[in-house]
Image (cartoon, rainbow, N blue to C red; front, side, top):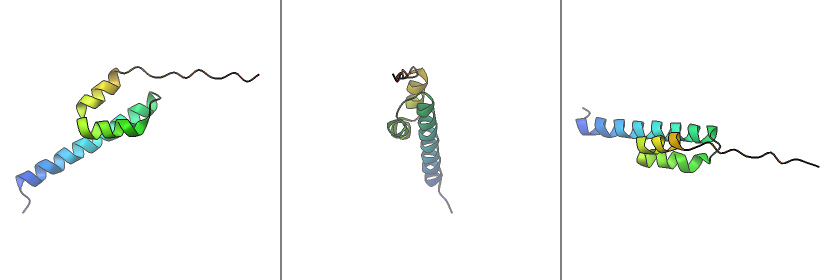
Length: 66
């Protein structure tokens, strides 16, 4: 039988993976590097997601070819 502790850690792991995925996706949408934000999402969960939501999107200037 599965103990309550095993269920707890499974839920924590799933929650961390979801936060990591959403941080990864949001970082790509905002023009930031996705891998570090995935790791931040895994480690810091909702706090990393809030930090990324509050961060401004990076805008790249298009280079004009002459």
